[in-house]
Image (cartoon, rainbow, N blue to C red):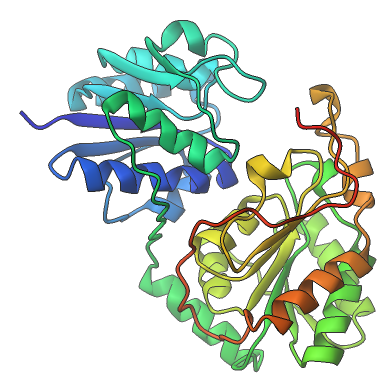
Length: 363
């Protein structure tokens, strides 16, 4: 009998992207399984039509405030009849969906500072305590409860033709056919935002020293204002990106030679697409969320011990200087990692490159 395996990872965008290697590992190790995923609408556009996925259950952020929507989701899940659920989020809402699905085996994490939180330890009935630090590796370890010891990391994110066409038109209209970088100014937490004038310094350096123009990405009017500041202060070496959907931005990132941004969905999307990536890591541990792969690097000087301060304390991001990031850019350039102008690199696992001067002890 074909098993049905359900992934539950609702949000955030970056964490959903970092969960995709689990999807691919399940498909490699259980080629005949039916695989489903419960996910929020914003992140769903990145994995729709993924070759390893059979069923996508899309919910809105207000699902738990709408009895009708929750009932519809539960009805659809019970009709689908999962045998196994993997709660990769480790919260009450994700483990409750797993429990309500009717699956007999509900896999989740033991309680930890980041995993197995709230009521998830009670609603999931098979728990695992991972040994790895990075969120990708920790999620893959959960499959050991199914007898899978597969550490291969593959994303294989699909690209829609409409998104590809959008990216090609944008690149042509902005005359970016050669090498170009993407700077992403936004972040979901104020504590992950880096000052616009520092991003402008990066754009100016890349333009003056490496002949590489920068496309500045944004989402929403507040980020657009910050992106415009980067453009104005870059000395003519940066230009404003048009408004994009998340999947359209992904297609632009695929075609760029370098991505610079903080710990956000677009940064993780860049790593997943194989683009050389410089991640500016603020309050979270760099060994958990930093960019991985031999062609990427993370920069962190300070992290926050108190969880209550992580969303609001800007000290870690402000401790990162433009000069530090410029040095990392130059190191990648000197190593010849930014010579491509189209996607031809698949992200590979290697030791995380943490360029940190004064990181506090691990939490």
